[in-house]
Length: 184
Image (cartoon, rainbow, N blue to C red; front, top):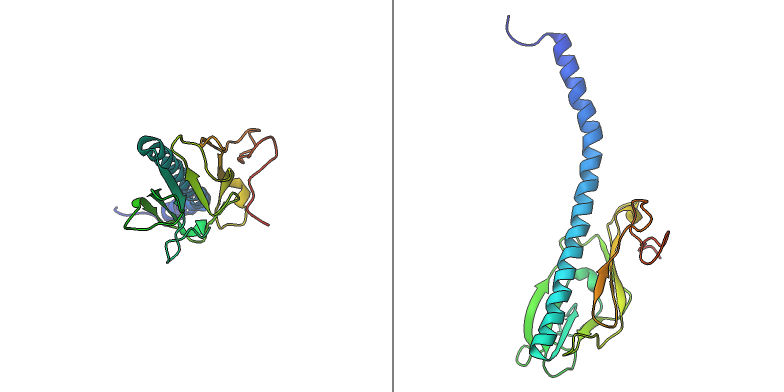
């Protein structure tokens, strides 16, 4: 006798269906979490790059989204550039300034919001020459609070990544129940 009996085939199919029913939603959540964590990691790394270059080369370094005319426009959700701004005019001029990095976001549906200004400028001492603020990363899903993360940048130029302070599975900005929300 070779092959499967009908009963064995039904049991195997039922096990596969149950596994997929419980496995796919958790895989979806893991993929969303990974995408947001990747964006947080990249921005953290790029903020360090900008700050370190400002200190090392004793010049202003700007991190912002550049419009088609190379002016910072505050469209953070489209990505950003990091450049040495030698003449300190907050405009990228290819002849005078040096482009260090160009970063595009891979999922344009996610909301990336910065409540500070349309740019982040580091001075020669590593301090901000702009307004401090918070980057919020929210996935384009119904329950965005469960996956949202943030980077909080102080005037000293240092930053910290949001954490789940009260162990409820959601990151907070400052204290308990101060969850990150990108909804108006």
